[in-house]
Length: 226
Image 1 (tube, helix red, strand yellow):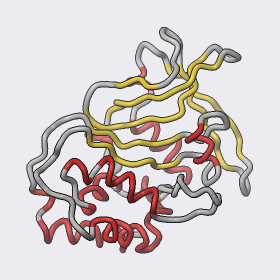
Image 2 (cartoon, rainbow, N blue to C red; image 1 turned 60 degrees about the vertical axis):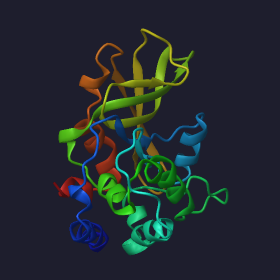
Image 3 (cartoon, rainbow, N blue to C red; image 1 turned 90 degrees about the vertical axis):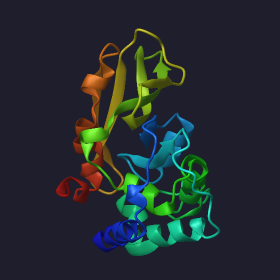
Image 4 (cartoon, helix red, strand yellow; image 1 turned 30 degrees about the horizontal axis):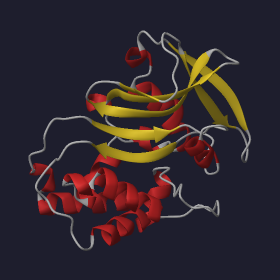
């Protein structure tokens, strides 16, 4: 895994991609929460009881870079190196066979959220492997309202720059619940819930909390790196 990361950062330094000037606009690192009702959450639950990386969304043009012929092959090669996609919990959620695989879904997400906005595969992967909380605030919160619990159940979160966006059939002035499915053995898990106030969601659901509570439980190497 570390070899794959070194591969990404080596080429970033060689190509000076990190020195390009990008606009300081809305961007978000997106995660899915396993769920038994939400469509994407259900797909995530096939591969993980904890979380799934969804991608990195740029919503504004970042540079004048045009799509290159071998972008897709290059991203696939990076992800397959040391099975980096597994180390990031970035699964192929378009795979109807329910087998863990790479990299059609990942490549399509890169094209939609990165390539179309002037982002190279290397810079996209630098974003997806950067777990430094310094520049990551909760800026996307997707949820569904549960009549039984009278709460908004969080199905997806995003962290980055820009204002908070609320997505989904959410009930206003109602608190949120984020479900923590901690693995026990095999595919069994222990369920805990964390209540997030609708008044201060960015204060309670911050990146450090999400990283330590969800990400590092399944991928402890992420908490071992800066």
